[in-house]
Length: 255
Image (cartoon, rainbow, N blue to C red; front, side, top):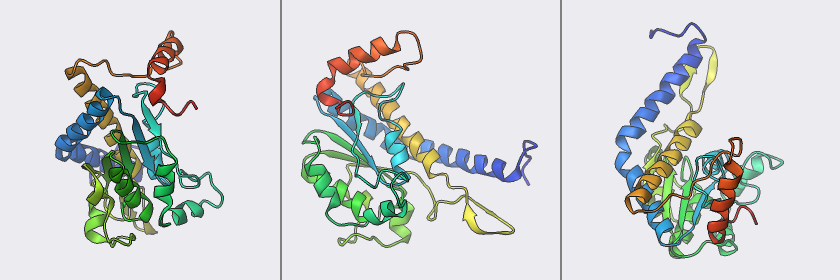
């Protein structure tokens, strides 16, 4: 039994599990993170735009890099109405929409995304129609696609898309979150279902790591990364106003 902090044993076990996963993705996905960062930097340098997409709880990580202090100003959320989170009623509708064929194509066709842009698709399982078709259609339009998913699902479950493929099969770069099928890190005597999901922690960390790698790659190209500052520090609003004005043609969350 590992030594605990004196608090909750299960809470400590969750922290240990999350830290272990973070260390694993840091070590095992380093090259892929760097490759994803280079894809983002290349797009910025070429005048491209950046988009993220995730459905359900996967949308949390996609939103985490949009319009935030310390983040790249050019990242835009590609939202699918009803599938972004649990704010839709009933919340189960979002899960149903993930399995609807053709929805991704309709969203992309009405979006500002175009050839040369980058789309990061976040989907833990990568097995539903929505993320699979989002990646497929984006590549057909000439976008570069980065997938953030758990490869374990592609190895241990069946695809729900007609093609039988997973998100990982339609990406230029794949980042494996290493999350086990079921997304629950803990079991405990007296608790019948496994619990304590860590996918949001790990996936959000991967997204921020990609943005850090992109900033590093931009500096190496002699480009000042278009970063936002906190509006709660002196001069933050003025800084952000300048960045948003300079890159107004690539920022869509203000329209």
